[in-house]
Amino acid sequence: MSLRKIARMGHPVLLERCLDVPDPTEPLIRLLAADMVETMLDANGIGIAAPQVHETLRMIVALPIRERGDDRDVAPLVLVNPTIAPLDEVRESAFEGCLSIPDLRGVVSRWHRVGFQALSLDGKPLEGEASGLFARILQHEVDHLDGVLFPARMHDLRSLSFTSELHHQLRPQGVAS
Ligand code: NI
Image (cartoon, rainbow, N blue to C red):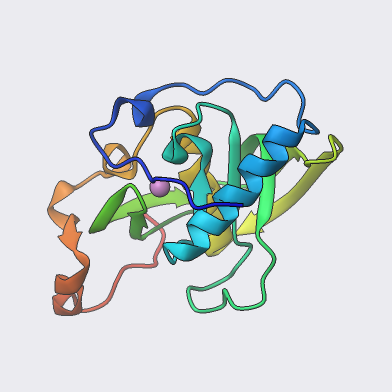
């Protein structure tokens, strides 16, 4: 396993539409998954998508956590060729960041609950439901597979903030929008 270089906003690899992984059981895919996990944890991230490490494949890693800070002892979930769909109409706005956009946060509206389908590294179908932060991570990472970064999802760019300035905010919003 090794750390991979994280592409930052402005690198064209982050704007590409990624391709399906033909065979999730390939050793190179397993290696990529291990490297993505290592790179994400090293950068203190809670999710990462393959294009962020310069691989235009439909593959993500997400921590299935309810809240930031819950991430100790949680096994990262590797999803190959993931698809997601909202389970109801409820949306939530909250600050979001990205390993490819260091030190910046912005308020993004996401579905509160989503269902996901994917393949595991064994090539087996994997499906489940996610809500709250976990659902937000999945939506953020799947966006990466289509070349979408979170600022493109922001309704109001005025909330784009340096992380170190966020303490000036009264309270990050967590309400339906
Ligand atoms: Ni990101």
